[in-house]
Length: 66
Image (cartoon, rainbow, N blue to C red; front, top):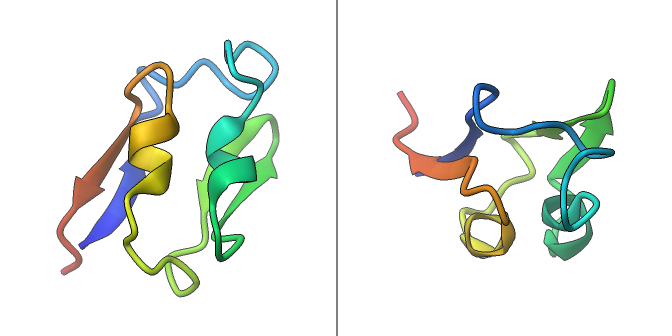
């Protein structure tokens, strides 16, 4: 599994009610800020699901890796 950010739902970090909590809460630093959007570095993601739980917009989902 890996996390995926639904860009249709994510309003960007500056518009986020939690100010990019997904980035701050990631224990491995697998999410960073890329042009005001959260960006998942898939090779660093350990699929813990913390960011899924923390996203106030429910824009982050668990997705299967191919």
